[in-house]
Image 1 (spheres, rainbow, N blue to C red):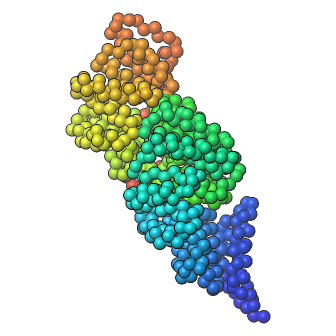
Image 2 (image 1 turned 180 degrees about the vertical axis):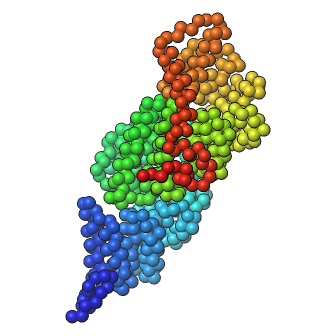
Image 3 (image 1 turned 90 degrees about the vertical axis):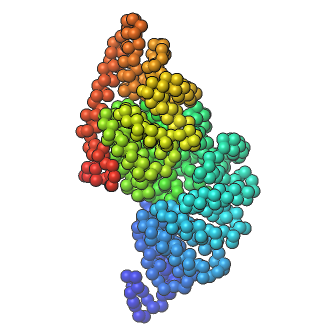
Length: 585
């Protein structure tokens, strides 16, 4: 019996290569399913199986399995994509004789195209394949629906929004029952609130004993939460959050869902933590935001730890990455408001390190937010020219979010008012016209009117000042936005007679947010108003301590910022942010 070497293995001429390839695939599956799993060894076995000269049908199958392993259990995304493309091209030569196997490869390939780096050509390839293959899968409702999902996502990412909306409508029309209907909305159009309520009502009638439907209910609540918070309806969020938290508690954490997974227990809990942090920040509840920051980061870390052992769709991973980065973003804003410079810069550094580690796509997406944070930090330090450079850098980095883009111009407008650069202020106002603001959330509108009211006061346009600040104040009252409420009241008290009692109540609200700069401003204003009225102020020991604490925190903010290890970021306006951070040991 003659022996020869193939792929580093000693083989006999009597052994068929197909048998060896299948044996190596079986070994790969054994290694993958071990506890703990051995993914690298499993991939090596599958790679070895792919090197054999076997018949085309089995070769295509081996390539598909190798591509799946690379896609879900490695960082070799490009190799996974190329491998699956080879398998798909081989299946095409067989016609429809191996349609089911080809469909499996197509779905994996779409996952690779959509979940990989943000490359327009990849989205275009996914659309071409789906357009060709979807008509052949019409009879298989589950496969056809999943392909529609991929088509909607790929066309959205490619920029074909009208095509994405058409696919959404097709998916809804093809659904046989509400159990099969899915929650779809166009990327450029918001789903109406009544439609969301209708969806939620329909989903609520489903049998909650089924885990998939319970998961679907949770996702419907998450969808309504996202819609409400994006429009600034923070009061509407409270009941929805309670319902989502109850749904999360009812979901078992140790069961792996089959079929379409909207979000599992860990990711929905992390999302709920993010929304709670957003609401707490808007309502100046620093302590609550800090509590949920820790909880949210713990949930994300748990998910990411498990993701190394379980197959996860790239879309799911990307959602969790964005949740984590958004949690750090909101925490940085809270810490800045509370004059906690060290924690704020820690959050900013964490955003840069994490986004760099998980992929350039996230780094590019979150850099504008980081530059905005640095601009506000520079404003707190009193370096308004440096703040302007950061805000302009954020604009150059092309923020994708309309509200974020508009808020940068709101920040620039305030910067120019503080510097009395009214020519630049008017230039910034070209991006804050009523037509542009009408496309933004009410929170952005309230902030914009606050800044416009400030400008009206500076330029002695008293009536305009009152109108703008009152509009901002009314919205703040309606949605319990205590910080905007406080700022509006304080600004109104400058040109108009405001009762000292109103300022006192505003001061009490401000204490919840640990906003020392605002507390100090309110406290100073109360003293001035009492002095004007000829009344003596009854300063308690607690008030004196609070006042001293505010002064110390506000004045030390700049010193702490300069001495922080990440302070070099304040000089980062372009290029690679990592060059402005100390190297990790």
